[in-house]
Length: 411
Ligand SMILES: C=C(O[C@@H]1C=C(C(=O)O)C=C[C@H]1O)C(=O)O
Image (tube, rainbow, N blue to C red; front, side):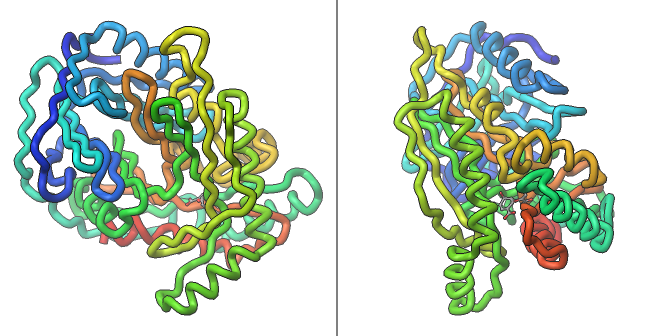
């Protein structure tokens, strides 16, 4: 833990800011959570905590509650995301589970017509555009496994599923990008926000990407989760893509994969919610590189015995993680199989990433279509849901399509 408890957090409304909020963010430790131009960016760190292991979510949640208990809040906007907020990125696996929560010194947020700035202890917030980042020059290489080796792991998973060990497992692989100089993450972030406006463009402590999957949003008692599972690559030909979308919506392999993911989310939310709505039939989400089967699950969170005691968005993320969209079914068997045959440490790939405010409202996406930047290297990640009739070559092609967002953003 670093930093001392801040005294005063002030949120004020400001005039509309033209262009992307990313233009305001300095190169030093930028933070981002943006979709369709709305969301929050931040910089500076007044306090942060690193947590690990199976208690990483609980430890981070406790730290945040204690921190905000000592803060005086002056908030003239009063929306989800105003007042003090933290950004976080959590490890996928319990071990090592390296996770980070950070409270920025300055946050700029936008929600429709409303734009605000939050500062800690009167920090000065320069809302002018920052010098633009430079394009990196990168080369790509295989990560822990090459394509052939990864397909063997997929074949092994299919064999285990067909022998009855489990129903679904998500297997991932990594690529390594090396640049000629340290990478300014604002470069790929700007590209991702522009190319994937329907996704959440995030960056926290080196973990960045544009995820289409919302693990959980809690906003004034309403809980939403967007579940994705079942994927088809786009061809670039609109007519063909429409036919493929129709085929995806009827594909029994993809519907099965999807059903596991929806069920895992609904079951994890159920103890915390009333009035849940779980649609019977998924819709097809169109992204520039792929299409997914998608289901939006909603519910109303219990109030809790006392005011403010309702379960926070971070604790909901903990309850939902790992959903069958990134782990498998049954969860424990799938997570053990991932550790056994995937051949790499996922780090914070496929873990929750997002933000939370003092009331516990927040948004936690799943860190997909993502990479982890460290100086002049980036580790890119992509994974695929494997079921009994998955074909290794098709899964390899799907993983390649899922690398495209970050790959292109670095090029
Ligand atoms: C695991 C990833 O994506 C997940 C797996 C999907 C699938 O197997 O069809 C689809 C969306 C995501 O839930 C990834 O992008 O790395």
